Image 1: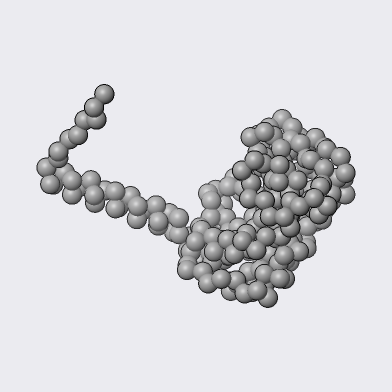
Image 2 (image 1 turned 180 degrees about the vertical axis):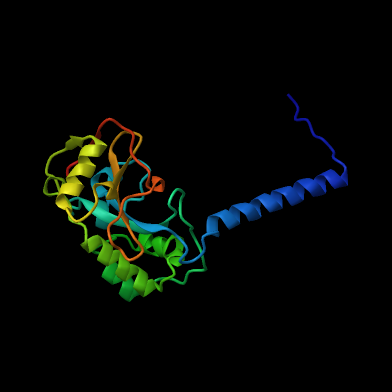
Length: 224
């Protein structure tokens, strides 16, 4: 079937162009509307490496996914978050993170490209310098204890999302129980555990923007 083409008067074309341009500007404003430092709380996002590395489309860095690494939870990021909506992203032009910071972060985020990405996408919205932002990432991660039975398991595990969150709550009794959320892949493997922290990195209950895995149960593969 031939494609139909319509010729519009110039004024209709102008309205369409202006509308599209306005919509693009609105999207940009929504994306950065909170601005640098203007957000409600942080999400410390802990990715479960064995399940991430099992995904066919994952960008597998051998430092995270290589055999014999025995890596369980790693830091995905520290994300400025709105109370009931995703936080701002890409709030400013980002210079590359220095190699000194990269080396300090590799024990937490085992991928140089992800370190650079997290600064560009999320760190620039924190209102902090790169050094201060990544110091906050380290402090936030160091404040969270991984439940012993979820820390580098030698065999596959299966739990409900609420059980995983409860285990994190028990391992971190100073945190409110509502400070932990899970996310999962479509195949019901565990993707992340998300930890909600105030701007001062104190534990707090999650807002609705933290999300939640809706699967009845999720699997955790053993470490490689």
